[in-house]
Image (tube, rainbow, N blue to C red):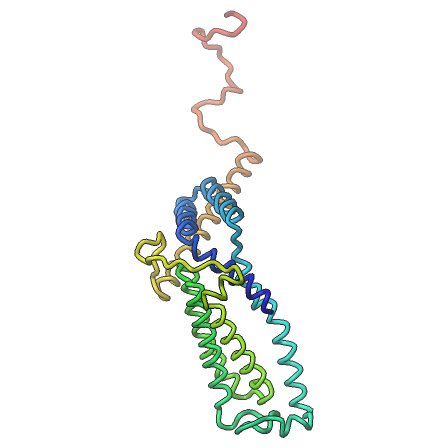
Length: 269
């Protein structure tokens, strides 16, 4: 997975360094979306896509590592769980220290706690190195911080074999993240140095977890209202084209019988 980690780190560094320009375009798109100006939204969207293509930015590259790790982790999880359920004889005394039997959960709950702690440390060091200062990234950072506490009640019943693998993987990831924070290592792998932006000078100010949730909910409601308005406009337009002509005049010119003496026809002209 290490080459994928390098790709993700390079992209994250560039995303951080060009964050002010990206936030300006994001802010313009948000304002245009609130005003219901779809033309401006499309224009700023194209401008952002062109800017990201020119600077070789891709937000999806930041997800390449967890997406690649997911099938590997699930495969190990399912395989080790089945080996513990059989159980494989070598797992009964294949552990060390206080968890010699890897087919049963840790009776002292130390493995689940250490696993959650190392996962939290990896997330904290990793998100700090990426400097997730944008509003949506701040919300993601809070969610990731809560993840170790959320999974702790479930991991206490896992067999020791699963937690031993998970803990080892967390230690490797933590060492790897710390290793890639060394300036000489970053230069060797051609990872740009992270620029530190003043939060007060960024176009999008951090509003905290609750403020970010409220703003996301408000933007969602505005988008839904605009979509409903657009749908009603299209429906009225279809009805106007297919239905009867709406009467907007005092008399029907197609049924006019008496000729106006003051009217002059085109032929008489």
